Image 1 (spheres, rainbow, N blue to C red):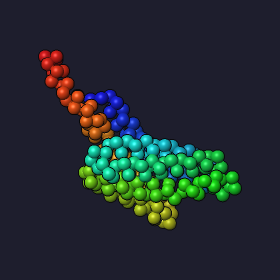
Image 2 (tube, helix red, strand yellow):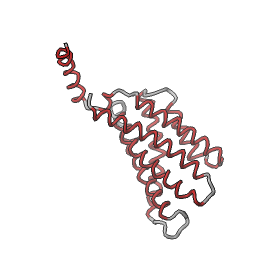
Image 3 (cartoon, helix red, strand yellow):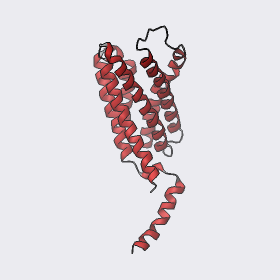
Length: 208
């Protein structure tokens, strides 16, 4: 099987793991009231968005044959979210004070599609996982649960943040494990794996 397929799969697994780890690091540092923690929090947030962007592309590739309609929608929405949130993270690094007058006005324009991207993309991804029957049966429920806690129950304070961190690790960390165990054929074109299967008898004969 193509080494490129292995590279695609490994890159997606690493990106999913980094998205989970960086997301938890952001939550932990965001809870810290120390102003000196703001740059660290912004950097963790930026790393999380970069990892999410790579994960979105990889997951779209993995699910493209199983859910040809839902996969590109989920991938596109999550990538849009990663791009928008990365802009926010960059702004936080330049001006840690969110009320600073120098904050780019363009951030107000990208905020709505960014939120639609992360919420809608995660929900569509969960539905795609359910339809594709990829991974354990409860994984898609965890992803939906993370959306609910992170974006609709944030008023619960620190308990919502802790629950969000746990669901983020279980959901996307579990998805990293599922991706690592996925068939390499999911990462290749039909032409590539057909050519590989056709070459197997010749290789066996040569070995004998």
